[in-house]
Image (cartoon, rainbow, N blue to C red; front, side, top):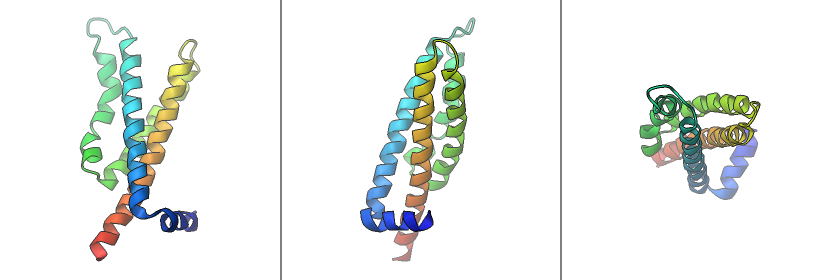
Length: 133
């Protein structure tokens, strides 16, 4: 696997791979946020209708400084948190009437996981290569 990743870096270039993985992170992060807000709006929570939205979105919002600051370690942690959303999406997909939303949530969380892990690898290698010059 390591050799395959190094061949990939040699073929496509570290800067290009870093940019493409960042685009995957931003796209899947945005899609996941939209899905969480949309599904949170459909839930009834008594007096405060914003509670389901905040509970679903707040863990992702806490990672915005890492995404904006392009920090590899924050992306690595976001990858692990995205697995919780993947699990939630799979569980939602099994409920009657929630299959599409749950499936989309699972796919976007899986995309976020993949993008974050790739970005953390490529960006950290990019930073090491820049420090060595």
